[in-house]
Length: 394
Image (cartoon, rainbow, N blue to C red):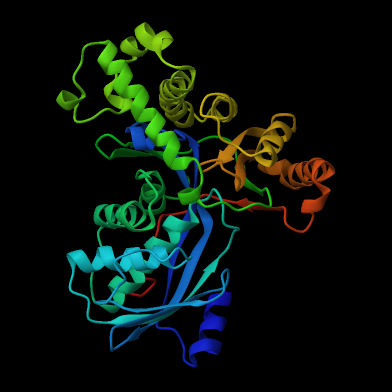
């Protein structure tokens, strides 16, 4: 782990612990968690590591192997407003932890990511790993639910991304060789074991990163809420009686009856929600039955809806998606994460993994030769969620 070596070189001491949080993929249920839909999630065996040691005076000093500069602040003197740099995520995390617990100690830390940033929820992984490290040096034992909510609040309130709990839930609750089937309306979930053929998870990084706070991510959420409000109004239903105008509160029969009255943009967003909700349910059933062919087909359908109905995806990601649909050995694939640049994910035949990676790379770079050296691919397996003990033995 390079973060440990870099920690020793930077701080001239050995780290006390190494906190780890996995990256995640969401094969089905994309873009509907913030509308209280259902999602399918898998944690990856690659993620974010933070080597750290306690600072007695409450100071926090954090460096990253991916970004220049250092974050410096005190646990009880966190800037009230974000500064716009990479370290806003850890400042937001410290602020949320300090709202619930008394923080006495700070830490020195070095952050390392296994995979490129973009579509794999690295931001949530950084927040969760940092929360577990800062909690550990302050002798705080975090529970899964509170960690998920604090990590979400750090992004919502401090960073300014209106994310749901999809990323955080996958990165905390997932277990190796299981699918997380999460209902975002009440946070109930199942962990469904896999009993089908072997597969690998392929990650194809387009060569472009993106920032959700500056993308159309927040706009899409506003459009979904506007669609819900309009549909409920057409049906004579007061959203206040349903705890808000979100698409989960709209009966599908109401959508079918009034969808043609919606402006085209809002109709597309609502169409994606209801179709993706049904795909997430069908996917959980296919997973339970070990039916990888059906599960993969649903992923491809989800990817197409993200392009046509949710209208996300850069030209590079759409090219990757098209290549995946034509590549033998790929059961199913789609954009990973929000779909504004970043990465694609695919479930692939483990016996043909190297062949698949080589074919996708050749095809992609024939379209974008200028991205040679920036485009990357990786093979992953499923993994357990984050160790909330900060990587310490307890």
